[in-house]
Image (tube, rainbow, N blue to C red; front, side, top):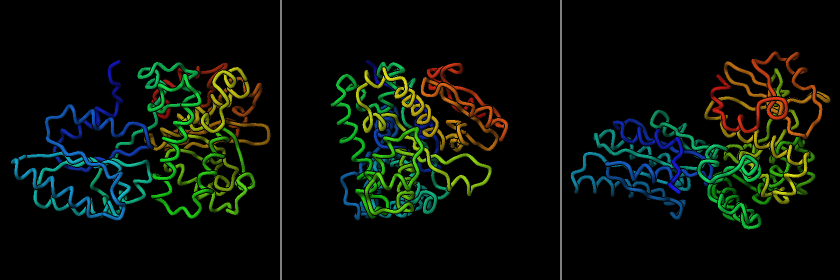
Length: 397
């Protein structure tokens, strides 16, 4: 099978071939193929390049960036190169990385040196650690999202049901016929490094064990509402609501787990609402809550939950790139699964797949809030496959 190339490839390639103007930043969650994308681009360019990985470097050795940069300058001088591309992977692991990058980039700009730069890092944690402050005005951001259903179908032959259950991580795609091995890979090789390296090491986490349990429990409740007070009771930890709420924000910034707020006309009611948990990738729900594919697929109510979570995962994973917010809405027995709000559009979405037989949520929401558009995904509406295959930009408008 030929190597699969994601659509981000063309964006990266075109920007590398442009005249030097901005640092190109590839940001996205662990194991969505950032490094692979860059390697594919590097194979297809004529520009000489240097690829460095900061993963094994001492986090306090911020001078490592200067040394790498200077070695490229020397190489350019020795070989009389007119331009050179420097790529640094996992750069967020280095303390004060943004200040060092700013200093070296600005030095090249002053000296009119044509060194182009790509840096890679994990999700918006990378943004928090310096992009918007030290490097303001010096970078362009290319967001690398979780893999969509069409990508997993075309690259690995996933069926719709497999995508709903196993999610969109390319690394363990070939393991789905061995479910125990697949789960072990998700937990040990994907989730553990994401929490321990990308979250705990780059944030002020005072209770790492509480952070891990918060993540695991939140994944188990994907597409379900659970108050933070009840969540703390289930965690059996001395943490408070403020601590857990802060951890959930960090998990969302890492594109792992979101706590959706209830849609309301005022911010106070949104922030004080009971959160609805939503994974960014259904693999995280299955690895923590799934029994087996056959058992869960045959249970109508349970499968309905997986379908709703798959729709929600697609919506939250695209939210930052397309600049919209995702909420839910519930008033007594009336519920709307997802409310999408952008500058110009409000969408109300109900997912029907056997989980609820009747629900008057959309009519009640339409009467109260007059959204731009409201529709059903699943039974009696847009097919699940069509929705998960669509470009959300076409719906947001």
